[in-house]
Length: 342
Image (cartoon, rainbow, N blue to C red; front, side):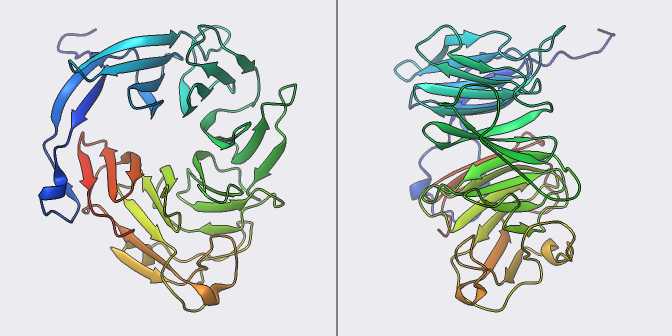
């Protein structure tokens, strides 16, 4: 290292945001959280998921997967399990890019195109799909108990059935035209055939994985890469996405009624989409179906609201539960919304 160089030490930290219920704050706001405990993490943290109320799992740029335990009695962290080099190339490690947990099961994907299946109580990998994909797998989620969804840098959405032998997906979906990388995926919590993805072009894609190979709709969204997308877990008419462009969008499909929007189209990219300048406003009202899949637009419209102040740096992650939403940015800031209108 040259003179004056700084070595950044990555950490896993647990924070307390206090009792907001009594604060009376209803808007997006910055808070000073209290640090409860922290522990060194080898490599960049590329994904983090809670396994249960005490344990969390991290994906590392070193290719390792680590399970941390939070000891609430004395506010400390410890490592309860680690799988070194879970993802790797022939001559070096490969970043682990995504994790999904359904305790005791953990599934990871990586830059090496590999899919790993773990159980938290087993020291060895339960199953590995080597060369599952020829490109980087960016994210993974459960579709059903025995099926997972992955998205890759070739713009493909794939379903994998763990009951099947071999390394081939059971279904492959893609957007026609350019193979724009997909970076995030989430499924509707009540209707598992409804899936949302986002990627390099900032588009929001809604899929029906029962019988269509292309998206049901393509929505012109962020100005840059979409890093994460989530349906609200208990009110899935609401969806949230965040982006490199510094925006955090709340998509509300529960409001009622108007005409067909110009930015909603059946599959494919060779269509005219709503100009991005229209979406630059803080709140945008356009019509869209109340159900994410149907094209009967007489039943609903879509309202989009940017939840963050202007000129925010890249919003890299978000999570939502009931009326509380939290996100983190490149500016080392954490934003919390306590009273979401859902």
